[in-house]
Image 1 (cartoon, rainbow, N blue to C red):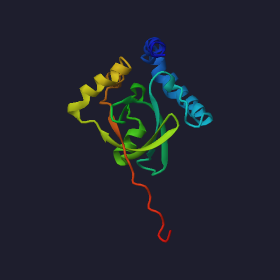
Image 2: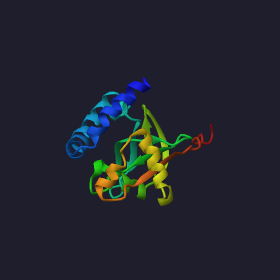
Image 3: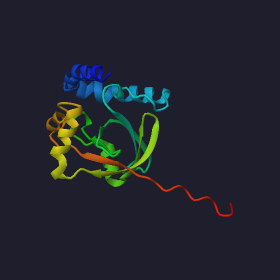
Image 4: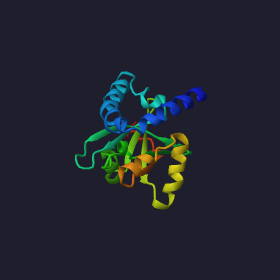
Length: 172
């Protein structure tokens, strides 16, 4: 199965570097398709997950305070951690979810239908090159989105948070 996924990635990766994908297919068509498939599968299937590890990031809006969801590619980083990159399909602006994490770093992710709390931290400047190298082992050429955007893409490490169980009400 790994060989099949690697072959499909090698065929699809060049498409993701095209202007048509960055301007139309990725940002316009992919999100509604992702939402539809995620909804009917109850979060167990993501279209992007057929090619790369994918998750749904659940944040709190930086300005609105409202819950926000963003389907994203992620790169496993060991010990249950994940790395996400705010490439925004090489757009000039940072995606909103990155601003949400800067203001509200406590978030949650859903991976294969399982929701878990995480704490986001911005990857510091001295670690960026190593993190990009790690990401590009999974998806070669992905850093080109940063180069083409003309901005420094925000990279976040998502660390699982183990919340203590809620205390039972007194008198029980």
